[in-house]
Image (cartoon, rainbow, N blue to C red; front, side):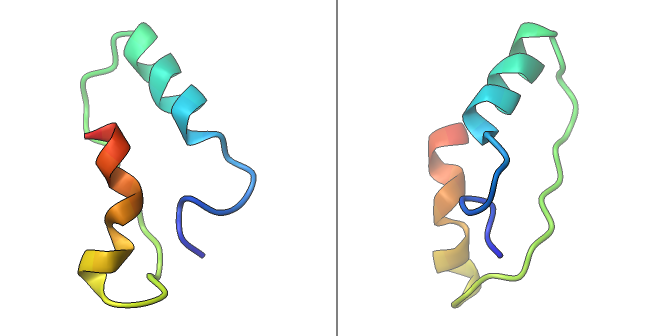
Length: 47
């Protein structure tokens, strides 16, 4: 599964972490459907 699928609301989660002042790293571990570059496309809105 890729991070843009499933039941986690990533926009809400990342907004909440920002509101709390979190400045650490966030790791994302998953198995992409295709190649690595294509699999990282979901990340663009959060950079």
